[in-house]
Length: 248
Image (cartoon, rainbow, N blue to C red):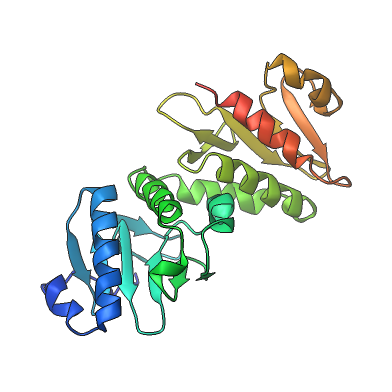
C-alpha cells in the first residue's frame, strides 16, 4: 500500500511565511482568512510548503490512501497553487468569470491574487469544503459504473454528467439504482444520468408545464429523457430540466 508523503507538520504557519516574498505573505494571509472563514478550521502546515485546513481521508482503487487537507494552498514563487481534490468539472461557469489562472487535474494556479474574482473563489472553496465532508465510500462504485459506459456513448455521457455537476456543484454523486444520481440532501437523489450503446439518459422527467412541449421529443416510457448519440445534446433544455427537478 502506497502512503501519502505530504503530512501535517509542527512548523508554524507564521514561521513558514517568513520564507516567502512580502507579496506572497500578504496574499497568503488573505487566503488563510478566506479558508478559515469557509471551513471554520485553523491553518496548519502540510509538508514543507502547503497551508491546509481540516483533514480528510482518501483511498484510491490503486491502493494508495492517506490523509490530506480539506482545503489547502501553497504560496509558491511562480504561482499560488490552490488545491481542489475533486477536480474542476463542476466549476465551469464560475471559472469562466474567475479571471486569470491556469489549471491542472486538481490545482488552480494564480500568478497574483488580484488577478481573480475573490467571490468566485469563495464559492468554489465553499463547494469543495462541502464535498470533502461527504462520504467517499461510493467512489469506487461510481468509477466502476463510468467504466461500464460504452465507448461510443462516453462523449455524450461525459458532457451530460458535467452539465449536471456544474449546475449542482454541492450535490453528492452516488451510485443509485445501478446508475449515477445526484443528492442535494439526505433524501432520494433528484437527478439521475446513464449511458448506453445508442443513447444517454436523464431521469425523471420534470413536471414543469412550461417545459413539456420541448421535452416531448425526448421522452421515452414513463419517466426517461432519452438523448440520441448522433445528435448534439440540447444543453439549454437539459439545464432548465435539471433546475426544474431541483427546485425545493
